Length: 476
Ligand code: UDP
Image: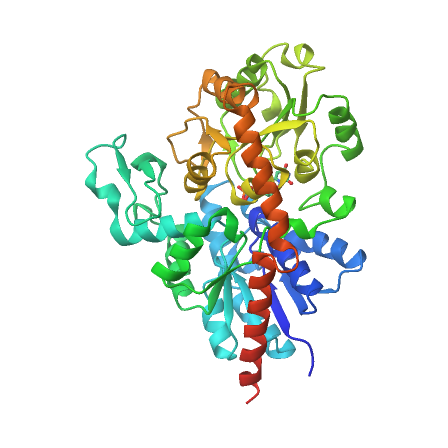
């Protein structure tokens, strides 16, 4: 019998595409045939994987820019910088249904692994009688929190935006304010993107199951809650990033770096172990200039050496002029500013890195966990406020910067003192030694989870077995 064949359909945002490619690599390494259907947005990293000898099939489909009125330059979600583009982007991805279904008919895969943002793939999979596995790209905790929020709406019981409420029925007493919850969870959002999210949730409930980029030991009570209380079929097969072993694979994840990687590592080599702060807020976040200045002052006054990644979603060179007067001269030896894309996992893995200031995007959190470094948590949007709780209150490997405001663009409101205080707490405070020890333990557990007989290895084996059995019934 031919190999089990999985079709992967990644969403066009780095936080979704990067782990899905890792997932395809992982399945390939376990003898499964894999094909990724991708728009131009992410074809380069897949081609690179192919060039390095990994047998992943690649089919490039065109994002229907013309048909949806989306300008040609927009190929990914982070390039959607104006409100009117959102509608066109959502339209464009819905138009992918027809070409994707043609491919399924032609190539006859046994399973569709779809990003949650393609809700129509539930119907496509049903049409061809194959299972649809959904990928959200986030933690079990965030999935559980979002579901309980939808079911019980605890934010309705508070009288003000700043009053805290506890999310009920979860394994821990997690407290939030309304301002930290996404408008989608509050059901206060309208428009195309909100509609897409609601459709996705409905489609996910009709899916075969969920693949989760996490490992059991990291959030066991939430993995159990998700499966046993919420009754959702799920397999934890992560951390997916650990399937990258070679230097090249680690250096070129997602995009080409804006800095020469060797130069960056040489700079880190010149520093003492655990002495440098790495600050990066993922691929989507966009802070105001005033907030960027506060970060600059905060990092400087922490007294610690730092690498700070600053991106501008509009690729506008002038918008890098926010730095306080004389900042770069004063910090020439102490700080490295990367304007654009950073080789994040190479940096995090370097022994000189002492802590990670992160926006709590799930990939970044996992990358921090796998590097064994304490974190300063600064959630901004999406499910990041949920992930923060895992880091600071459950794993206790991080300290919050104290952001209270969920916001996707124009992020601001955290003063320089909050930045420098949080940095000092993870670098020199009384809790540092214990926090570092715990972080090192989770790093160890992450590696064990993917080794033969580890929790993620075993879950992946069970999933492959189940899909193989399901395939036999497809032929009957
Ligand atoms: N990333 C990177 N270099 C950067 C910014 C981001 O390599 O300069 C990678 C990061 O390592 C992670 C992904 O992009 O794998 C971002 O995903 P995450 O879930 O952390 O955040 P998002 O971008 O979705 O907000």
